[in-house]
Image (cartoon, rainbow, N blue to C red; front, side, top):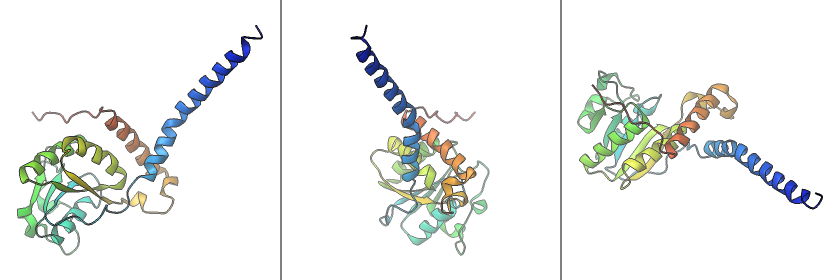
Amino acid sequence: MSQRSPPRRRRVRRLALAAAVFAAAPAVGFVLFLARIPAAPAGPAPAGAGIVVLTGGEGRVAEGLRLLAADPEARLLVSGVHHDAPLAALERPPGIDPAALAPRITLGRRAASTRGNAEEAAEWARAQGLTTLVVVTAGYHMPRALVMLRRALPEARLMAHPVTPAPFRTPGWWRRPDALRIAIAEYMKLLAALAGLAPPDPVPP
């Protein structure tokens, strides 16, 4: 009996260590996710790039319009627009009239999720012959958006252009309960997206 105990104890220790690692993995992954939330654009986009705004938060559409106004060759898709929302009702930056840019703007009204955004953007980019897309969404949403877009449009170059919502603008935002709740929920959605579990948008009646 005494000869068998040490191997058994080693097995128990190994199982305990494996369980501890398994339990800690989500927390470690969440910390890595927080560290990878982009706060600044990936770099200047080439002239004539497509701009894709994923609706759902403050500052996104206004930033997309600002980028469009700065590049006369660019085109813009605003994905996830409500079915009866006109261009004039969308958020705009000061000093820019969306009506003057309307010929270069497409309002995508089909998408109801990030997966739907990606599929809508892929269809639009291929129809427009675009190979570089500037992706505008919240920084915390950017990792999942890029995962979905790379799956839907693997041939394109994607350039992250994050915006920072109000809860994430203060130093030490991860200590704020409102920002932390958003980040945790987004991390869980990212894990589901990486596992291929994001459901498709419902088919319109």
